Image 1 (spheres, rainbow, N blue to C red):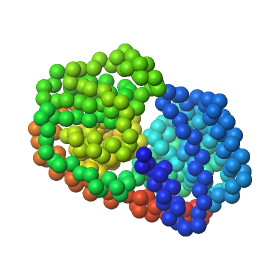
Image 2: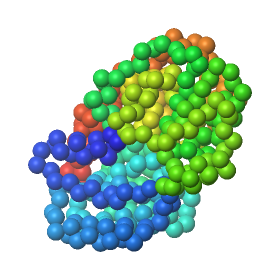
Image 3: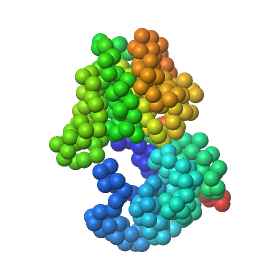
Image 4: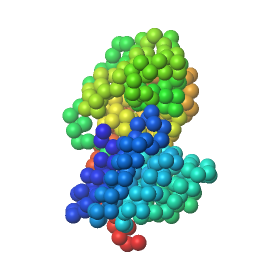
Length: 337
């Protein structure tokens, strides 16, 4: 997936003779932050490799759970400065305010990095408010140039096609979406996303136990990322009624192909909502979401007009070139410290 991690790597490569260490170890939703034996082995091998390499810039995605933060501290000890810490979610300030082991570990980790790449401007302000004193900049997420080849036709389908793309969970508001569309005529919902379990039978069993699926909601297996642009333009609107977000790629990707979006006003989405780039939910509430769906469906020409404006904004604001410039500025600031 084209994420801010990929954009940051590309930006650093564009800066010239810069070598890069990316210390991320892949984590899946079903391990819930635990570090398994194969990850310990991978960590040991990675630390040996880090000791051998003399990277000019190290890029460290900062975790949000205790095992991950312990891992980050161990790896930071192997790196030389400058170290860019990358924040990949929206919960960091809340963790720091909450106290306890996570807060203590996160402060230790952030104290070891030279600079911080945040997802959005407000996140930088939140970190400063809780006492983090490191050079930081809002990097954002990166949209690949290849997405320019795909664009919504702007024609409304009948029935009205709603797409949910992301983790099938209450945290992302999937239950709110189900309640909002239950009994809503002329609306069909396709939910495509990640699962909490690798086994298909367990996936479907957990889904039926956790959620009541209305007859107009279909849940599909995850798709390859290369299939997402076409999937988006085959629908009329993307919906993300999430309780907490950083800067979700699904929203940026929908905007980049001109598909209207209905999403919560959380994390970086608050800034996008202030720019009138999508239809915002002021509360994660089924009744409000139902009303927003009816409004977008009834005034679809207006929704498409807004989506096309958002498309141009996203392609300017979240291009690899723009991210490269932000990273350049952060590295220059680190050089001056």
